[in-house]
Image (cartoon, each protein chain N blue to C red):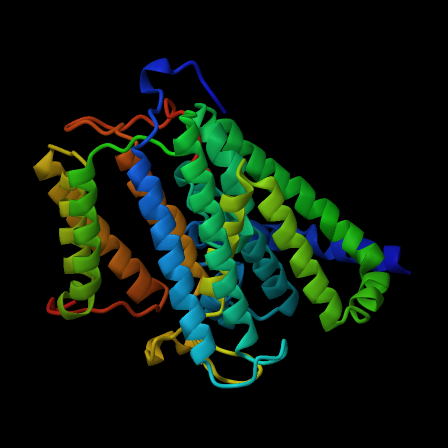
Length: 164
Length: 246
């Protein structure tokens, strides 16, 4: 699925990003391994301890393999096309924070209110400048989804502070 | 014998009233099935009260068959247009259907899914009546060891086929299995990777995982690819390639 879209050709990311990724893998492996060994039970293949421990070892092995391949490619100076250039780092951070906040306010504020606010905020974070339109769509959409799910389908959504 | 029953079934279905029930069921099922996280089984459970008013069991069954197939098809719509399969059954549709949508051929992709759903559904239902008995006999001989072997085969083939890098394929496999073992062990009841949180005892729900991986992942990916400009809609069809895992 390649198109002659040259202006968006991806430049390789800095090699420190790949090293950081390798570090994350190794840390995750250590975490899974310690958690796996902490499970009570025996280490036989039928026991509950075996699989998490094996997975932790697999994580560590893969992390070392990945790290070795990255170091090799950096040392040989070969271009690496496996990572893509990122843009809008600030917008990404705002959106991620909004998602986490949304999770925390969903139950206290209720589905309709928090979703409407999240929609407006996410649209702004994604680059929309039609604030009035976003507000109308956000409020109508969240109310419509709320009523379809809670009234018509009988799936309960948190009602929160609004008298819905 | 089988053929007689099959033709008798068609004779029952092909009355105006029952065909209307089928159309109603497919419409309802598609509408509800489009919603992410609500698959065929949940759709049927949700729409069960609809049949309380019906006096004839055949009509209710026809209605439910329609709902089932409609919900099965409904999942493909979000897969194709948003790269977000609502349930595990339509993950495969997202892979190629969304590529078609990005190439500007969303209409053809949706039509293919609809026609394919109808034709293949009809053929498989017809064939099932013929092979149901031998298939049932075969299914009862499949043991736990066979399931394990099948699982290993699927994991190995997915890892080997997806992406160019074996290490990254194995990494995504390890990530999936790690998420899979969160919760209570099915055999011994020991909590694994729950970090003492009772919320995690049930494990991580498949639907939650799919929405997080595809819907939120796709949103962040579109943002990070740098296509969005303030005050302008991001173009779907000019993106270079899919969010390939691995």
